[in-house]
Image (tube, rainbow, N blue to C red; front, side, top):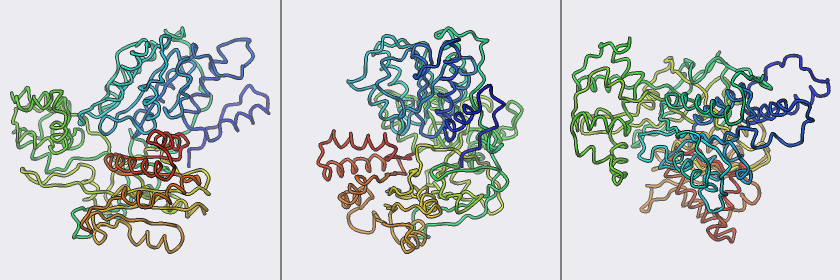
Length: 591
């Protein structure tokens, strides 16, 4: 449930206007409220003028567009909108898929805050915006002033590729860059904070607003809980159950955490954020490899605490590789950073942790220098595998315990290892990360198609629970895939019971290694293409969750299904799928 709005002070409005205001703002999300607030501020800046039916003119406002996959870009954009509005600027804040593209030619001041995911791809909510901007139909923009803040992860070779593309394309179209593009790594605030300060100051200048001007926000939203990303809640582990059998190559866990007393609420499709701790064995190995004392003081804290709770040890990034190569004089490692070595670099980043790098390419580090060079530890997000309508003050997760054998010993993923090895009664630092892009349809009569191989099935457990509790009349179709039916069929008994009870109307399975030829969910999509297209034509909502590579393969299969059974060519199929996405009927949560 969304947080309840805070009580408004007694407004200088007639009684009927107060009622209209309450009805207008009821149910609006943060971007809608900020846009409406900026609109009102723009009207207030015109003394004596009758409110026009339209919003403030493009030349008198700041437009902020964001594209966000995990919520970081949205948070930064909302922060900028709040600061700009408080400074007296007319602001509209829009998610990229809600931006009216024909209005781009009329914009005068535009800030874009956008993340990059996977292999240099835009976030799902910005795919149409980016495609339009990079395409032939993008207008010339000589009147536009702009700035771009990109968010990314330098452990991927194409770091911040989307932000760079947008920044360079806007310049090509004739727009004037107000100041240099920001490129934030996982330590978002280190770059975002100074970028926001500069963005705000230059927006004031561009719109001729005095720094002292202030505007009271139209409506405040009271926080539903004191706990947040910055102040996580200590959630007690209630259950930790292995879902895969001992014969599986995977160790997938079902965890149940208590949110009792936290006030935290979530909707199906949201994620639970965890602030991880690095495995103690890994911390000890790094200290031993570098011959460093774990008790050495670094800025008031012992080195072992920095390495255990504050710095990334399981994810490498380009900046650290470069520093390490220079420090150790490793020419071969330096060559991996060259422009033509992206595949080799990606392979290294995917297969090596800090300890592997230290063992393969030795170099000396002091405690302080190591802490300064490593990236801050970032939270990990896990899709909710439950509905609060069914489980109450609990959060359920489906976690793949990432582990493998390396030449130097066993390796783990930091967060998955922490979760998989947690015991009943342990406390884990968590927070809720909303995902407005991945929501069940408001119309409970709509059908839903859910494609979730492996742990990608997690949110759909919550979807089915929620739909059953709400008495939804629409049908539910799940497509699930895994290596082996005997060992890897996650939540098998629950799905079979859901079919029997009518909570699930169709279940199609793809166990890739149970026959000579591998079969994946995308093969099932093609196999049942006629039925799938009929569901879509009947208004069904389509959801995909799982690995980025799977998401690409599934989308290719969807395009084939649409082309084959919808009588469209390749471009027509892409337009059909893009329309579904614009309508909120095609949503992906890929990682």
